[in-house]
Image (tube, rainbow, N blue to C red; front, side, top):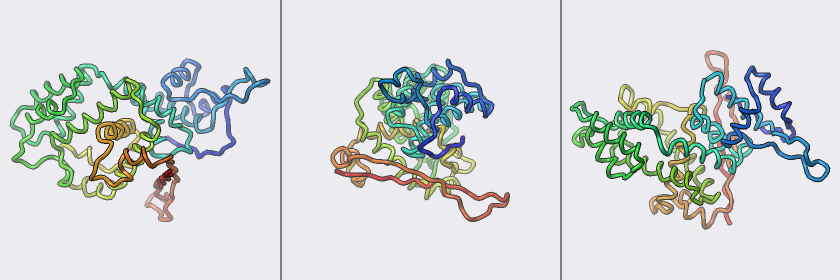
Length: 332
């Protein structure tokens, strides 16, 4: 996926938009564009004024054109047809690349609602698959109990009864408190921590599906909270990856980049939204990371980013690149 910076001047009418996407070898037709717009993945065209301009075809920005190209690339080149998986792309842009890259907060809210609808009531097959993944992460012994844990947890996920105690009880079939837990020493993977994570995720899914009011400052707080904690986690990520090599949670703590995080963008944002709904005030958190403080004191928050190219030359002759993310918070 290639993002293009905001030029401030480039716009596409429908014919030019289609030509742009097709110039990269991808297919775009009216029905597909309408599908993306219905799901919130693409914005409707901007109108060029009123009065005499009424009825004149609208325009798309360069960033939305690039987003459409990426959506078509995911569909054709990477065979990504699941709506929920596609939703990660615009949310990833908003979450990590910032406000200047063409995905508005309103668009992102629509996309998150679309994603939540596909996640809230999983099929029996998806419920069992999700249960197996959670059990694998928590299981720290080979003494049996896995099938019972998977069945109990799959039933909980399928029915949507997300009581943390029930989830924890099902995972204790495969967890021995007398043995070391999976995961790094600092952040072990425990039945309680998994239950807590699932509860926050489901709190957000329910809120999104049921149109529960979450003001813009809640979303802005969630983005800044996620980026701050991710930055702190990144400082220890190499050590965590080393500690978990060969373990059941190796993939969970493997080294990630901004690009690799795109596929989990919706889930990461949803968990933090859920945190704000359940725990708007956590005394242990510094006030700049507490939602109650943001609601009282923060007027707006903006995230900007820029690609930083290292002067060092890699063995293949290229230069390594990183993304510098800057958060600007304006208080009352």
